[in-house]
Length: 115
Length: 115
Image 1 (cartoon, rainbow over the protein chains, first blue to last red):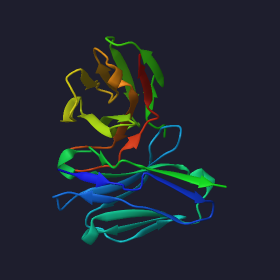
Image 2: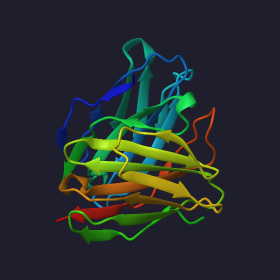
Image 3: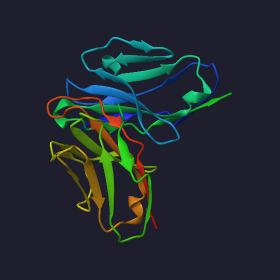
């Protein structure tokens, strides 16, 4: 069975602080995919990144960066110089090729960035 | 390109009634998945459709059903509504399913309230 754990239920920071959201996953598959989604108050899940299990390179996109470590089964997400607009719930998710597009989500982390 | 659209955005029903939710995927996307989001259970996978066939099914009772049309549009139906069915229902589409995992893009959701 697959499982995704986001131990941080809520995080509150002040604008311009850096913040890291943790994600730990469990799977027996050797091939799998990891995702991060952002859910603003409007409710729609916004896709941020997809990573396959064979690509452990870290990725940076503007103020966002992701650290994928298979040795610790973690896929952490860092926002540098946070902004108020970053306030949202962030979900980490896992899928396996034989399950089509089915996603297993973590519990989500509510990030609040205060001005 | 237009995103995933869901109708209606909000619904209020009473226990025992049935409801039908609609989802139009991104143009060209052939896979449609449905998820239920509640504060207690988080984001849970309901089912996935590809080429008018159900490819995957989550752990939900038979009261939850769905279908996909030849134009990839999908509907989900919940019969004999219960209070616990109150949730945000999210639809997601991806380019292709079956043997691969494409990124899922989500719609704004339908907020269902059962009284």
